[in-house]
Length: 153
Image 1: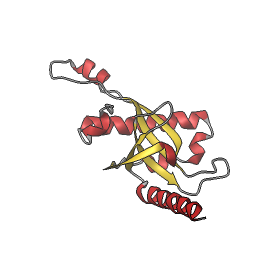
Image 2: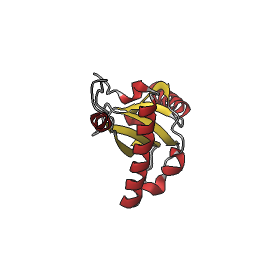
Image 3: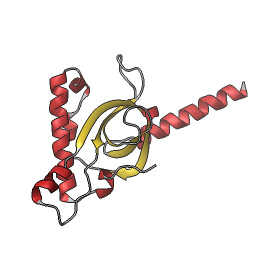
C-alpha cells in the first residue's frame, strides 16, 4: 500500500510543478515527435484538458526552420532571404515539452492562437502567418538571439 501512495504523491508533485512553471511566454523544448529538439513559446496553457483532448496541454508557437547565419559581406537581398523563419503552431501534451528558465514576450500572439484556430485550415494558415511576422520582427530587432539558434545535442 505504501508504494501506491508514493506513486500518487510523485505524480501530483510533477503535475503541480508543471502547471506552475508552464505559463504564458515560457520558452520550452519539444522532446517527442516531428519537432523534437525545437524551441517553442507557450501561448496558452490548458491545465485541465478538454473533451477532445482529455489531458493537460499547451498551445505553442515554435520555429521549424531557424534563420541562417548572416555576415556583413552579404548583400541586402541575400540577408533578407537568410533571415527568414519557418514557424509552426501546435497543441502539445505537457509530458512532451521541457520548460526552460527563459521567457519570451510576443505581443499580440495571445489573440491569434486559440482552440478554435485548429478547427479550420484557413484559420491555421492565417495564425501561422501572424506568428511568422512576429518572430521575424523579433529576430531582426536583435532581441533574444538565443531563441533563434538551433539546439545542439
